[in-house]
Image (cartoon, rainbow, N blue to C red; front, side):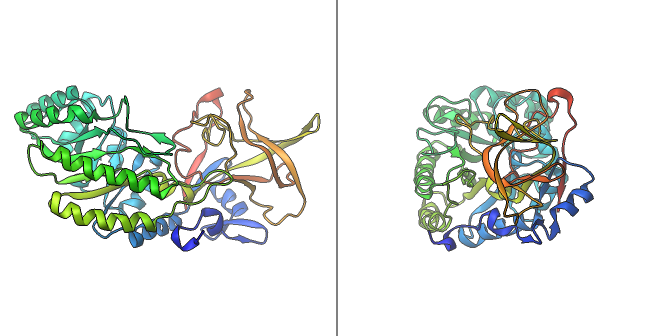
Amino acid sequence: MNKARHAPSVLETFPVEKGELMIAGIPITRLAKRVGQTPFYAYDRQNITQRTAYLRKHLPDEIHLHYAIKANPMPAVVQHLAGLVDGFDLASGGEMRLALDTGMSADNISFAGPGKSTREIGSAIAAGVTLNLESATELETVARLGEEQGIKPRVAVRVNPDFELKSSGMKMGGGPKQFGIDTEQVPAVLKRIGELEQDFQGFHIFSGSQNLRPEAIIEAQEKTFALAYRLADDAPSAVYKLNIGGGFGIPYFPGEQPLEIIPIGERLNDLLEEKAKQLPEAKIIIELGRYLVGEAGIYVCRVVDRKISRGQVYLVTDGGLHHHLAASGNFGQVIRKNYPVLIGNKMENSETETVRIVGPLCTPLDILADNMTLAKAIAGDLVVVFQSGAYGFSASPHHFLSHPPPLEVLV
């Protein structure tokens, strides 16, 4: 593969000096002392900045880049991204408060997700955030709450398309879904938006996530534009925003290759030429979370015991699935696979062994690495789980078995 066609992987960009992994120029052992405890998550701000710049370079200038806060809602990360992206996409009222605290204009913030509470909807209306409607019922609630406030709510229709993003890790559209309004139901909802005199903004069409095949993403984007053109015929006003979702994935497991961005950008240039004719007033938004922050983060825990059970070497750490559910294989994996894992303070150690890395929890599910060949480790060494910048800290059950939670730092 031509490496110029995709962003460098984090395993290529985190340097090693004197046998130690370096994070933002800091040796891993020194960073652990700076944090003051293990386990912890560390996010490299320069990595996030470079990833954003890489996208800016290879996507058309007309594309508006939004960050999906659900990927990593750490306030410092969100604040850092506020200076890099064009907007935020939210999935809760808590994320809305984070976004507004950064100073990002409400006009560049949208709120999606089924089952929004009346409190969340009311807050979004008051803030001027665009509400991505998930159902006809939600539209009626939005209209009622807007009337109570004397504000015309900004709304967009989240569409459940009649296609899906092929080979995606999570399919968010196509078939029956709790997300969005089925394509065939959208015209009636658009008519009702006009009757209720809501401030119609456009469409949100998100078909899937965590995809490493550029041809699949291109096909989904082509279908997304075509669908938007059809739906626009029934819109109560011009389409001002078209969020075409994201789907850009990162490699986690052996054999996976980084996503090639260049062909996606080249095809988008063609699609935008047609868009200028069909939807001349529409701002095109790409919504990304994992792709922006996933490879910038690591999870670090410490070996507290090394034991051998019937020939199997176990490294027992002070961290586990309660801190990093995804790395344990219990967050969407059907067949468990190992995340990239290394002994961070023994990066150049020639003595290796095959081990199972487990946490302190009283469950056999508490596995961070299984049957991995790593540098020989002892108590006190640092286990590093890569690709941990997205859906790590916030997606894990910190209260499970009442162990203390990890810390987070942006460096």
